[in-house]
Amino acid sequence: MKNIQAKLQTFAGAMMVPIILLVLVGFFVGIGSAFTNYILSEGTILYKLFSMITNLGFMFMNNLQLWFAVGIA
Image (cartoon, rainbow, N blue to C red; front, side, top):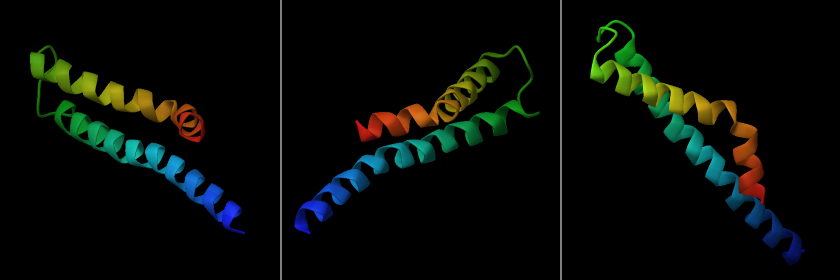
């Protein structure tokens, strides 16, 4: 019984990595999208920076299954 519990705790710890990453990526997408809506005009350096942050966040979200696989491994 203790062996199963130890393995489940290890698995739960591995699943925390993608969940924490999802929260961080959500902040990136939210902040980047908020500033690239209508606040900043296209072509400025800040617009490109926030657009890059948004795209980085979506890149991690689109490959979320990969991050769960990395967490399990």
